[in-house]
Image (cartoon, rainbow over all chains, first blue to last red):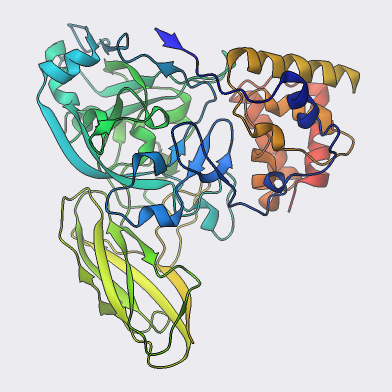
Length: 399
Length: 97
């Protein structure tokens, strides 16, 4: 069923030599910890910002976040474990069952595509740790800046339509999701996640096989992945192979030991069957924004028209306002909002910048959601560096 | 050194046989100092070595200790208890902030 992707360019000898330092005996630019903007192309992708090679963690450059829909070949890549099989879509099967599904199913990609209603929706896919690398004080983990996120249209079928064919039992509590990616060592915990049953049955939770109208790229979960609009990307399990419905809280490492935030520290849906008094699973994406133009350290020409533009989004209530300050946060004025294309989508904003006076321009951008949440002035420190939605500041210069 | 090199050769060969090494990873070199080979062989089985310099500016001996024990206890890294001190000494000396 599975074939291995052959990635190898180096011979055993040269790899061994270089991994040991070998003949060159010097650090490469990628290894010195300072040049963190190395652009490298994975197979099927354009050059992206390399954070780590294996498991592959690659970030989308700002320039590729300017379009409404992030291109498939520019979309960020995030894995926890290094074994990523290339799956033959013709022989791939999705198994659906578990103790609380009385009638298990096995579905081919053609079954998914033809036996269920097709649904397409735009949604933000954002890593829980997006902007971890901008935390002060810094937090260990993949040092993402702004590009561990993207926006795409996702096409597939509703998870609930599939689950309802399995004779769900009334005691169903969580739905456990497993993908084909795994670890090299058998003792390393496999990447499996669970969702509360009500979120699994939400009409917007999809098993998607297309992204922006094309089959999912290999590195974004081919042939099918879960889409949980509004929730952070940790739940969007790639290369789906197994779905289990159960009456007990799932006790896997990636639920009990990772992707957790201090209980009560952030707004968002509570995943109560996984909650303890100290920590709780991360759930919804918090209200946030990104400036895509001008670039963060741009010099604007004196007396030439200039415009600030970017995106604002949240976990599914939609964006009600984006305010801009050009005096470091003292006074705020509303930016113009682009058309709302869906509550899980990002929303464009634009704001004319006054370039009549030369000098520094301390710009800050603050989004507000329809749910009444607003980007904060200060970070809420948490051990894993999740939920960085602090108001963004840019130091521009009019000259 | 010899034992470490043999273990390194074994783990890299295993990775290559499985086709799991991404081209480009071989460009990463850890700082040449005592403990490097043991550290590299212990880490590279499961992940590329760029994780080490990426986190270096915010690491200390205490945080490396926490990380190494997480790798052993949570992720099952095949690191012998008697090797932990040398790995920690190397990481603390060359990859902490």
